[in-house]
Length: 136
Image 1: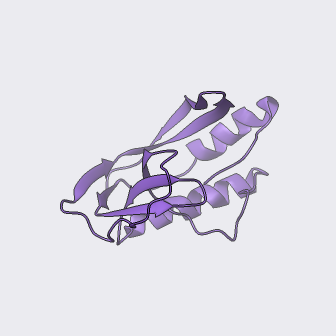
Image 2: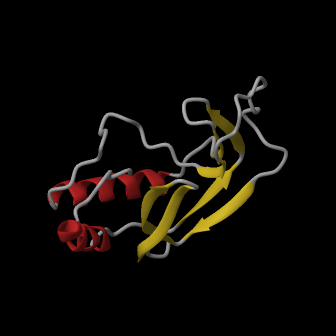
């Protein structure tokens, strides 16, 4: 989920809320490419999101809401993706819905990442990492 700006004095509460999320590890199969023209972003995603990912997103959103945080756009569907390239010029040909090869990614944790804009583009900082429990 994208949280938007969070004041420094509320950051620890956000971390504690995320730390309390109990969710399972899962496999993420990146098997498709996509392009978002509104932000010129080429991405890899999955054609079939695992149930454990939906469970993680729901539990995280619930924990954050209980702690007084809200998603910047709760009506927007969560779009699990891996950013491949930013600032891609408009593509005349859209990437296919499938790739030649699936990349299987074992997801064993999730993270809180801070992004700050700079003249060179976004700068990312790892704030906290949260483990997921082994699958049942």
